[in-house]
Length: 188
Image (cartoon, rainbow, N blue to C red; front, side, top):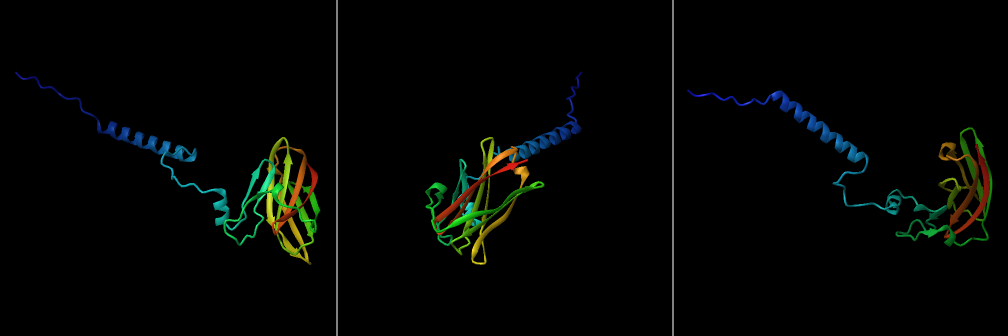
């Protein structure tokens, strides 16, 4: 007499559930890895900040400590050199005046006037406090009545995580030279 052996049947339901769980786990890991920048199959090409700025037709800007780095050469030239603020010579014929520096509601307002040029140039205002990261804004100047105006620049007070006194350094760059002025503001 033969004894019939039965093989244990694998339930199709169990296989389907296992496959679904595996697919969900793989999708979950992929989403997490992409969000956390842990994806192992990243492109080997990286784009520098200077290349991103050039692609957007903006002057190259960055920060080194509390000193902004600004491209002060002719913006129409390719591969223009980038200089640290301390390396840009001061133009004695330029003069900067802060015309507005105040906090109204939840916004900081900054404006400046430049005399001695009719070139719009580049305006950079840098707010620094030893207890927080610097807040830097850059705009192009506008020519009004033969003088250059910078601003108004509006900055949300949410960009300042520390309340109290902040040093305000303003620099105006044109034709490879600069002028600057400093002040303070109490952010509440």
